[in-house]
Length: 303
Image 1 (cartoon, rainbow, N blue to C red):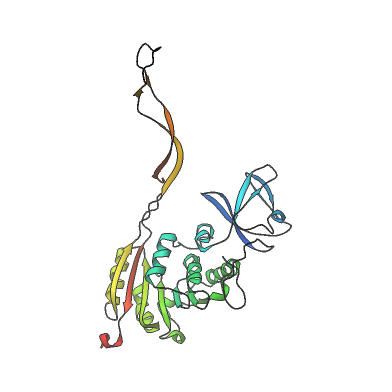
Image 2: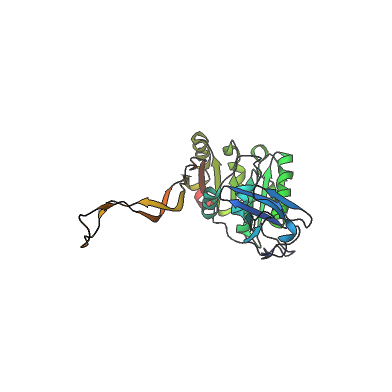
């Protein structure tokens, strides 16, 4: 994502260096993550691109191949990383991620707990949201998946802000060391209601929990469990509709020409005019899941 220094502050390098991760933008539906190496080349349908030509150029540069084709070299922001990362599990996309960060009230300095890590799509955005002084502790029961996530966080430059643990949160709950310290908690589990009692103990007073579930039956059981120690329980379904905006030609309505002295009669003429057109994207993404938010009750209200 963004290179980091030893003080855990995100420091964006404007120019590409040897060893950096870049997002190679070929077209709106074709991007890939590439690690820059002085001696390497990238080959695609547009030709051969030498990595050595990229070094020293600012992110966002347009670079050309040996055939005259071109690509753009973009900084690996969390938004772009979500679009190119390896899908080890079903991931959250930008619409859900932005909503989660807003409703969990995540700001720099927050301590956030997450289970499970999965492909790390949300985790990367959480890390940027808590930077430079906060931290994300994310857990996954699958050891290999957790190891792959660590590698990705190293690649994207957020490893100083994220700690990946291997733990069955659904069966064991969160570690006691976080008791009363978490500002926010995110759950992406098949049976989140089993973890809610543990999550309640981890949250600070007035802390917020979010549970992501693909099925409404999971939401119902989670809400039943939340009612004892949580308040302000809300569930949302984010439906995103994107539009394609392009310039094209449209036929204008027939109209009559002005009559001149040398014209015998009026004539009708169809003309095409350039216009910017917008239409719904043919690949509109539908239902991803339900987001349930709840705020921990104050001790006086739980008595």
